[in-house]
Length: 280
Image (tube, rainbow, N blue to C red; front, side, top):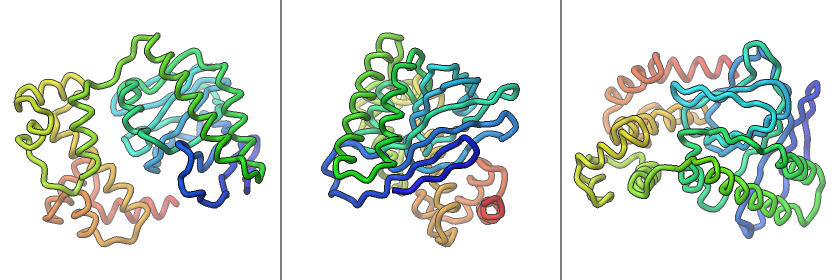
């Protein structure tokens, strides 16, 4: 195992060897963070799910144009593949425990429990021992680590499911979930509204209405947003030519890709890549 400590913030990495995915859930990294109010917002797309438990101060999470506060005892579940940001409030430092995790049907559960629309759930102070147990387990080289971590995540997700239902939060309908999951699994495919309606088993107008009501956008606008999230990730983390990135994001024409990317990010792909490398 390895750990990094900076001031009072701690990051612990899971350095165990792959056990063949025998357990449902896996935590690659966890930590305790003290975010200063002048640190700015975290916006990195890691394509991982992150759980954040607010301990003290005031934090916030942004999803699209929505902003959600995190008071002590609040928990946020963020899919970092989406457009998001989190950080301390402008007038207060913020301390929180966090862990990234992956596993069985995580995307589906995240959507089903409504965290794509409302990422914060209240009344989770009693989850602190589980966060600390996972963080402590990652710092100890033990053959029992994968089983222990998976069990803690399973318990936490079960509690979150009960809390979300008790607080009246519901996720997207089965139709929207089914279509969005197909889109995410094949972002490079040339989708059509007709094809999506066929997958959903409803008319095109009904599909448009369902998506608009539950996501705030049309199916094709939702698809473009997901493609841009993937494009940002590939441009930031790989050396692939922009034409290859375009293909993986469903654009046969690099010019069309660059045009859409500039509309979404405010700058062309090559300038975006150059900027994030300067910031690294």
